[in-house]
Structure formats: structure tokens, C-alpha cells
Length: 263
Image (cartoon, rainbow, N blue to C red; front, side, top):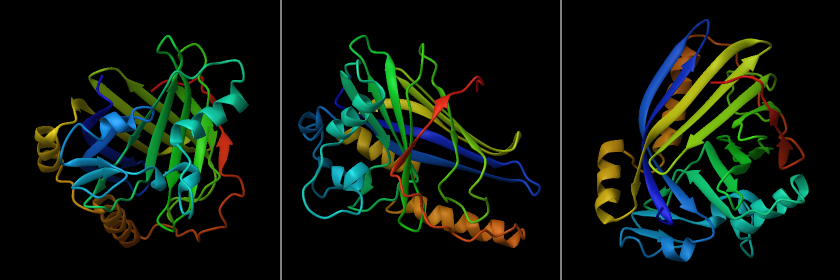
């Protein structure tokens, strides 16, 4: 597998209502090996790591670096530090990140997912890094057992003004060398309130696939952020209850647990 692949995906969000609401979009993500950033930086003249390009990735946008000034913490080290806390006897051999790249130097990432693997290639740790449009960030982190990739986390971070900071997330990622499927289900009590999925095929990142991905996904700078606000206006017009933004949680991350449920 290349140090960095492109994911051209179909993204669906379903609000289960009442009132119901649905959106469908194409998306362009990168699936990047955080231990091989130097190699990823050489894959295309249209893609760069740590500097401006048509498509780019910078560690300053993520994890402990988000919103901070000064030195940059390597994201691979950040993930391994968390793994030491939760899995002290486990060796992390590889760390990959699924995220939207910067397009012409700008980006907004509602959700980025880190996947840590052991020497056998098994997933051993997931970090679901969530951001809202107010500049806040929180991560839900869990260690799957026996290859089970569905995690459950209590919602403690404000994302949408049309949902309370309450309820439960079920989070799931499935990946191989050719495809990725990501799913999130949000429940209030036992009732599904929102289901979001992203699925697509991986392409080795090169100049041709960068152009193909931008064209097929229709990805332009800050499109995810613009889309969020457009959908928010539609929801407001449906007269949904509005929830004020509370203070973000004091902790940068909270722990998720294995879920007995499947997607």
C-alpha cells in the first residue's frame, strides 16, 4: 500500500426525525500513513506534506497541534502515547489517518479517524477526532477487542445546534487495501436520531488521481464547512429545536467502549 491513498467516497447523512432530513455528497479524503509522511510527500507534484499545494496535508491541523502555536507534535507519536495509556503491553506498528485534505491551503474536517495496528495488521486503537464550526475539538478513543470495530461513546461534545449534548454514538470503520467504509449512528435513548456513512474506493495518490478525485468529488476549498451551513439553514426552516452551544469538555478526549451492536 502506498504511503498515501485517495478515497473518492459517497457520503450520506440521514436525520431520522420528525422531521426527517437527508443529504448525499461526494467526498475526497486521504488515507495517509503517519509514519511515512516523507514518502507521501514525493508521490505527486500536486500533493505536499507540510507546505502549500493544490492538495496538501499538515500535522498542524490535528490532535495536540490543533489551534496551538509553536512546535509540532508528530501525530504518530501522539497516537502511540495514547496507546501506551490504554494498551500498555501492545506495540503499535502502523498508524494511518483518514481525513479531508487541504484544498488550496484550506480545509475543515468535521471528522478524522486514526487507525493504529499491531505487527499482525490488526486494528488495535481507533481515534475519532470531531470538530464543530466554533473551533472546538474532541476525540472519542477506543480499543476494539477481537477485531470488533464498532465502538460506543457517550456524546459529551457539541456538534450541531439541532441536537442536544446527550445520547450515544456508535462508531464503525472497516477498511482493506481497496475500500473504506465509515459509519456513525447517533442515538438519543434507544432511538436513532442520525445515521451518517462514508464509503468508497482507494486510489494510489498520484497526479492523475488527484485531478480525477477533485473532478469526481467536486471538492473545492471549505466545501464541507459551506455544506454544513447550507444544511443548517434547511433544518432551521423546518423549525427544529435549537440548542445553544455549551462549554466544550475539559478533557481533549474521552474513552469509548466495545459495542454489542453491529452496523
